[in-house]
Image (tube, rainbow, N blue to C red; front, side, top):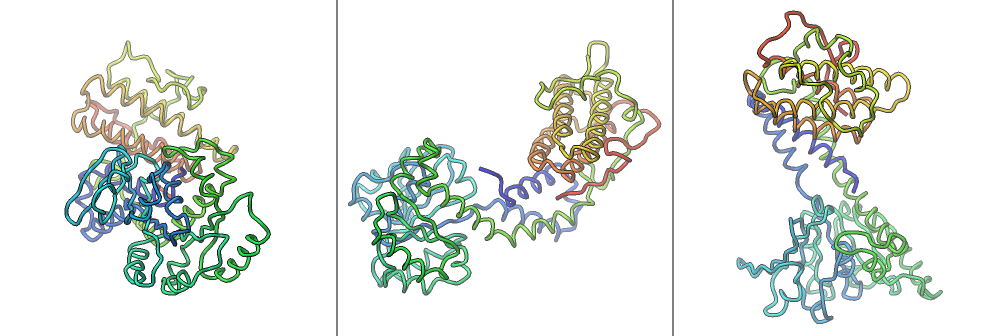
Length: 453
């Protein structure tokens, strides 16, 4: 699944804090609090609620999204309480009775319902979609006496509602009365999932559906037709096993609608996070508190001689050290890796911004440079201080540049160049000896400012 803006910002801000290290303590306390709270909010999963009348097949929609069946009989469906689904390293089921929790391996809803009815069932599933989205499947809504309590579960901390309704039946009085009390802001993030649709539709059911959509057109953000049985058959264990059936069932469309509404619901959070990143643009990346970006030694400006093939191989080539280390000390090897990497990245950035507008090459060189550094630093503790910290920083930077490579635009490429400049400065400061003269290095025309998107 493609990364959302929320996920990208969470990764970028987390990486920023990791690379700042102890330098974070030098920031203003209110700014530290904003950074911490923003990362926490960005890392919180989004709650999606699935609900409907007993004939709406809303639990079947939940089974489709979870990639497998929950129930073995209709009696279990009627008996089942609220089901919550979240991410877990392996499949597991929890039956919650007040403060008591009974745990079962795998998806064991039938076992959890075998005795006393639990208050809630919690499922943990190892599928990627649940890393960022929690799903709550409410019990069926069939009586007016339920309305107040049902409404609380429907709207509490909810980002998106999927309201399931039988496409072959008119909009019912129960649905009218319940939906009338749903806040308008949540209606704007709601989907009407019309079930019991398929190739066996008659003219009568199509006319019923048309009239139904006319009545509720202003009550939902969008609607989606879905054949639940086909959708469930197309997905197993969190993976699509029949793509054609998956699309024709309406399952694909429902997921796309849901993810689009998740993005809309997160707009303010994302906008605030982007504003925070703009404030952090001028803060130097690195482990040294208060140290500005260091100019790189003249060695990094010399032409590439030891490894001309660095600029000729594709990013997919094996990321081995770019020079032979047989006749050099580890410190000399690192200087050459930094020099060659600087030259290759600088040329790739200049070429990309000037002609092709394709920035994949610079990310390939960056990955090769970082892999070479990591390999060389792993062989011996050659830095005069913070050796382990620098090695950890290289790992974090590699992850961040990998994320930037997905964006593959000019700003992301310049970000990568500025980050590589910083780690090069930090490493060269810690080598046993350094050249006396220094000039700017990786970014073209001496531009080492960090410009984030």
